Every structure is written in structure tokens, then in C-alpha cells.
Image (cartoon, one colour):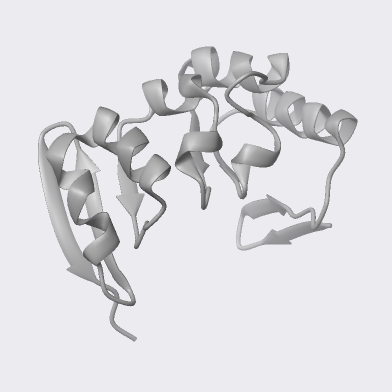
Length: 137
């Protein structure tokens, strides 16, 4: 579905196959100057596989003004290129030991608090700061 509202174009797919995903990656590269959000990125970029179109966006997208946001419930199951290129991690409660170990290798000791976070509590990490907060409705 295409949605164009207030100068913002959104491409929304409820399910997408590999060919469509490659098309959307290419579309983002050609449009430039946008934010590309991929939900459940572990469906498209596993530790052992990443589509070449996504790899190209990760490596060169900044030259086209492309920012990327990746969402995953299982960080240990996403491709390492994604985490190595990420400058910010926002994490909610993560209790799976393998995922906590994986995030500890990236975030350091701050990842150890992830299993203790309460509902709507988060850790917002960048290399130069860590913030713990609570989403308020």
C-alpha cells in the first residue's frame, strides 16, 4: 500500500517476498533523502544471509541521504552488518539469554539490565551515552 500524506510517502507491506523486498530497497536508493524502516528485519537479513540490495543501502545509503531503522525481537538473529553500522540501539525488555549475550558484545555491561526492565521501560544507547527511560501515555 502506498500512502502519501503531508509530504511523507510511506510504503507499507503486511507481507513481502524476496523479490518485492529487493524492489523496495532499490526504490529507496533511487529516491534518496528518506528514512527506511524495516520491521522484523531478521526475516530478511539473518546472520548468514543478507540481500545484496539491503547490503548496498547499509554501506552506501548515507551518501543518498538514507537513514535506516531496524526493528527485531531477536537481535542475535539479525545480520552482523546491521549492528556494526548502527549508531543507536533502543531496547526494551529482552530476557532470552542468547540475545542478552549478543547485545552485551555490542553495548557492554548496560545490556545486563535488559531482562530487568519493566513494562514500557527502555534503554537508549549510543557509543557516547546511555539513557534509561519510561514511555508515558
